[in-house]
Image (cartoon, rainbow, N blue to C red; front, side):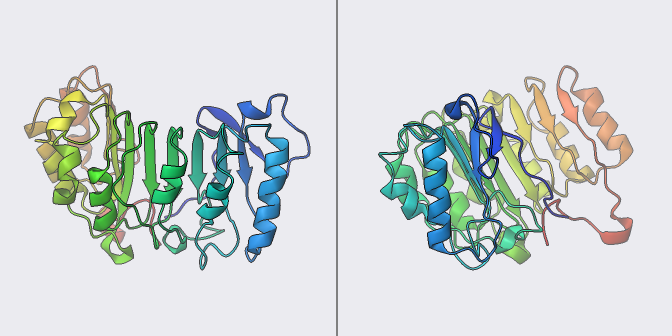
Length: 306
């Protein structure tokens, strides 16, 4: 299963496609989206689209920016250097999503990325950073005082990235979402690689933790059941993966979860009885056990993988 849709809102703002002819009433109150129709678009063509967006988005540039296809994303990493060179012109940028492509444009595990550390250092006021695709993705531990939301979507997230995230100093981060994926596409992280996050030592403001799309969902559930960070979360998300009865049993046998507002487990392989037991034993918590899957034919699978 893969991704077939684009966001219609981002950073709380409606998305406006650059190709739309009509300018919004307030160009700073929308999320601008650049998506090259030509999958083989050159760097010069993408830069021309970027300049067009800058002209239309106001004197401080966009508040939020989404980039889909930038040209040969299956073979060429996103040009973060273009944004870094224009950092002064992008003074209003607060949110960025790089690689928001459907599977028809580029399969998630084919999307090329690079070292995102220089970009984060160049934009200290950034609040939300989303990236899709982990091929070539790199991150060096750093301190960023503005970041509140970090989302990394992948078909397989390397353990090196998971450990680098946990080693970062993001004092204001409230929302962390990692799509761990499958080992066949580079997702070799284990629960131990998440130790700084699960222990609560990292990210003191964290209130929303998503460990999604994981073939190690059962292992994660067992780790989460005893993880100190859970006590301060409002939302816990283990969705899109292969969670079954054993993982659910771990959650119920572990620390209390009744303080949560939401426990998201949608797309799972639990029995109907176990799914209902979770709902019944966590009164007052919104427990999402929708999209129950049948493993008898295809086995267990994550939502996003080729």
